[in-house]
Image (cartoon, rainbow, N blue to C red; front, top):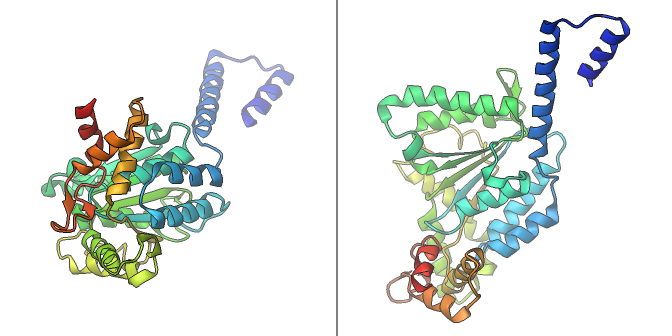
Length: 321
């Protein structure tokens, strides 16, 4: 709007536009178009759409669906949040942590996890060398600050958070705090999601105890058996966890520690059916059941939970095609 107004004033004043000024206006117009293009990547937030997405494509995780839906909705509909949204996902392999991060992304961005505003960092891949921590710290700070300064509704996923060095985790800390600007930039519209296996054993123990008591897993909620507290205790008892030695927990900057339950046969079967749809295969319940049963389960005698969750479902399924 300001660019348009300036053009009108120049024309009215009969000012001849030199080539240099024309270049200035071309650059300004390009900047405006670029900003509108970036904004267009944001989807209008729709509570019902996220609710349906979680219901249709996430299996066996009623706690996750409930907490994520409420937390994301509250944040996305708040016109003036006092801090970024910070979620920490905990559970064993293949239970849906990455999957849920991508579900959130596709309800925020038109291009989902393919959006250039969706950033994922894997601890052992992006930060493999301990002797380069100072370099990684400087790069990480620059990446986060630069992306949010150009697009406030950026999303950052940190995978293998339990393997991340404390020095790197502490680099993230200033961006998560309340009512703080970092070098003049507000981070209150950004989203940070931590993925971790930390707490996975505790979550499995709680789920197994519930099964042995003859209760349905749907009876388990965030405040059941002090689940969230036990996850935190497990993190603190793990001397090798980067989480333990960082200041993020001490300063209470994580909004929710969300437990992902181990998956049972019926949930793995649902994953197989979903993969059939994704691969444009004919829906075949008997085949889905066979594929699901071919995967390993634990404990050894009861065989209640899938060892790898739904992680290798696609690889198993294609063997039967």
